[in-house]
Length: 214
Image 1: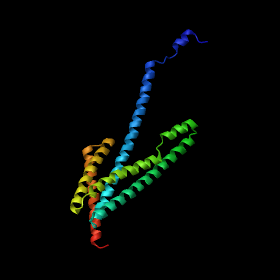
Image 2 (image 1 turned 30 degrees about the horizontal axis):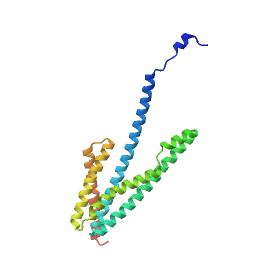
Image 3 (image 1 turned 60 degrees about the vertical axis):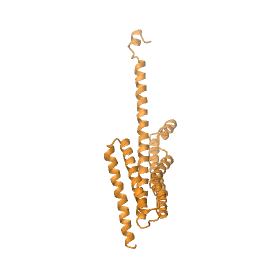
């Protein structure tokens, strides 16, 4: 049997140490949760920015040769549907590939059933990722569509589309910069200038092709 001195010599665990360790673990979980949310938000902002810019560029390009509002709106709707489907399928394939790799790695590590279930819960859901990506793209694509839908005059319609898309580009650029902890003004201007270039090039090249009679 252990003597009284040996029992006294055993290291004691202070309640303060346990509380501190618990707080540290909780803080780590909280930081991880915020980081995960920031990743999702940033992906949503990028998806919305893609929908905004690609749909607006398509509408501007087709509008360069077909100036009626119906053609412009139909082009935007086709761009919205095609882009949202493309984003969803691409995200589904990408996340499923990541999911399969992670699952194979966990099985190689001979994890128990409980550990495997816990690991599965931490992995991203491919269908949720696909739905979120498609939704974000569609939200962005709605901006130029709504801007052009109620304006019959061609010149005014183009001006309205450029104005609303420019404001949205600044907003998405600023939000993406905040989530990525980058300079807001510089990032917003970079996104805005890039958007103008995309719309201008699409408009100019489509106008050139249309003028050539192809």
